[in-house]
Amino acid sequence: MILFTIVVYSIFIFLSDFRQIYSQLRYFDFILLAPILIVIFASWMALFVRWVWLLRMQGVKIPFKNNLLIYLAGYSLSVTPAKSGEFLKSVLLKKQYNVKQSFTVAIIVQERFFDIVGTLIVSILAIGLIKNDFLSFSPLIFLVCITIFLTSYKKISESFFERIYRIRFFQRYTSSFENVNDVLKNIQRPKILIFSTTLTMVYRLLEAAGIYLILMAVGIGVSDYFVMAGTYSLSVILGTISFSPGGLGVTEGSFGGLLFLQNIELSKTFAIAIIVRLFTLWFAVLVGFIALKLSNSLNNEKKS
Image: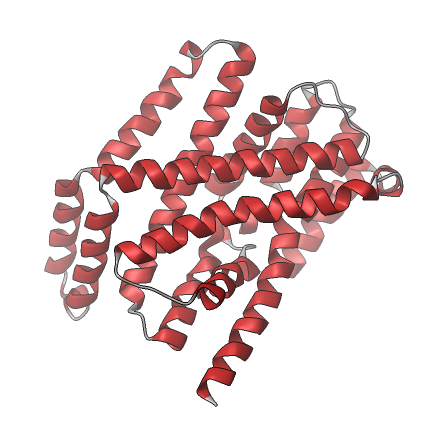
């Protein structure tokens, strides 16, 4: 993944010209650095609230400090396809609190679903407001509604697990699958779907505010906040469905391309995309590794 990241970013640096990136960073308004980091971190707290709530729906209660560190530790492996590295949270909960992984894995899968749906809704609403034309986005709106319906329709999940149980290889894991199925049934309740998706939307809107500040810091003016929210959300969706590690290359490329459509010089757009991802992706990875270290230290102190 490190080699892949180096290759991808080398291509973007080549396309944007290193002097452009240096120029953007050289004139970066560091007065805005603290507000940017605070807003980006605050956006994660919306997802942390969702995480705590979903755990409590399963009767799992973890001390606040430890739970926050475990949650943030999941960001250490954000540079994985569809953020699958966040299953690390399940491993840590099993190791430190003996919480069944079948429970927490199901919750993390649902988190990814809420991420996609909430992000897609933000991008549709933002672009719809910009263009003042929601009719052209009706196929996407229909797709979101169908996805939510199929996921929340209990008979579909029950039918899926019934078929799984018939396969001899999976019969030894029947109890684990039953636990997963129970969690999914609980999470599929309309109240949880609406609340969790809303928190995802809050996360994306706060993140967009951070990106808006980043663009201000590098001297790029964007006329509308919702333009930024829709642009970046759509780029994240494209990066997620590409299944490239952390959306690398696809998210930056699509974000740069969409910025170019907003009359920003092409040579600058890729530089801006890299700078934005330093805050929205690599800052999270750094915080994740620090949280992982602290979480392990707390666990060792508890054992001793």
